[in-house]
Amino acid sequence: MKLGWSSRSAALKGCAAAAVLTVAAACATSPSGGSPPADGSPAALVNSSECAANKAAGTITYVSPFGFDASAGIIDVFAAQKLGYFKDLCLDVNFVTNSQDATALVSAGRAQVTNVGSAADYLSAVGSGSNIRAVATYGDTSDYCVITRKTITSLPQLAGKTLGYHFVKPAPVLAMLAAAGVDLSKVHFVNTTNYDPNQVVQGKIDGVTCYQSNEPLTLRAEHAQFNEFTPAQFHVTGTFNVQFFNKTFLAAHYAAAKDWMRADLHAFYYCATHQAACVNIEGDYARQAGSDFVTSHERQVWALESALALHHTLPGAGVGVQSAAEFQPEARELARTGLMKSLPSLASAMDTTMVASLYHGKTLVWP
Image (cartoon, rainbow, N blue to C red; front, top):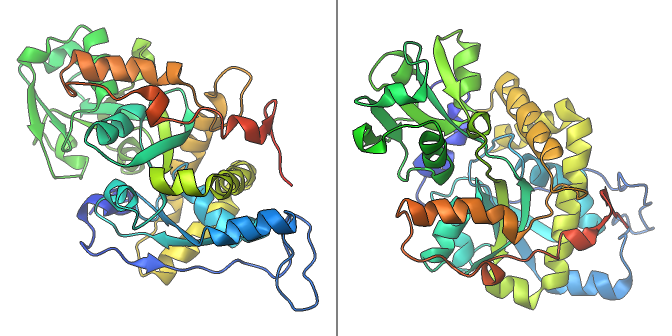
């Protein structure tokens, strides 16, 4: 397993049985400034009725889709727990960190919340019948990429060559290839279960789909020779990190889910400013679980992904605010390429008001 890839592939190559990792809040005193009452329990930042309603939601289990990866939508959840933000809002949160299929767990109601890499990934899950609803999208740009051997200097040169992908061809990548003028019928697509990006450098395949915040970082750290192509280079729009809840849970405990997102986004902004501290927080959890965690790599992951989210919000909106319009390009690409025969209703598949209501302009409202 190459540097930095173990955590990213954990969701696909981990144990079949999902284990729940329970982690306690870091301090008796809230980092937001609240003082603990005489009995030593932390003071809530919401009123008694809101606190009771959040407690009534029971344990909210978050499933990390990529183990202990310092990715947006993952690192902030661990930080929100450690910093006491969930407890500030009377929320009891647990984690699953080694599931093979985070979406399936949430859809089945065995967990309540998780995330996927893009709107296309999310819509594919909904189209397959998953009982889920999206509440937040962290950026209106794509984190996908294609890396190729150094000798391939333009995407049309992939004609007659092998391009690897993992399980499903990413819609933003197909849109990028089309925008670059690639004749897809001449590309030899290979479904590869090998997550080592060095398979490209070593010439085993000519290129592979990837995440900008993972494989290229690994190869650069190794001083490997390769080329990277991103959708944004070809003016292809996309989305980045879609957070979603079990649809039944969301309907029954909407206020608790909303406060969960408030705490999560509060942690996101904290971590965007205190990057090393939050990477160390997640690293501590990883080590407690006996998982590999390469701090130097994860710092690069978080630096890139936090910048993607901060610099690619909807106009005038904060991180996480989403719209049906930003899902449309990937939805059209799913239909154009035949990756989906029929598209789900976006109105049913996503909530565009929850996270927007957490902000005053671009400022997150924290109790």
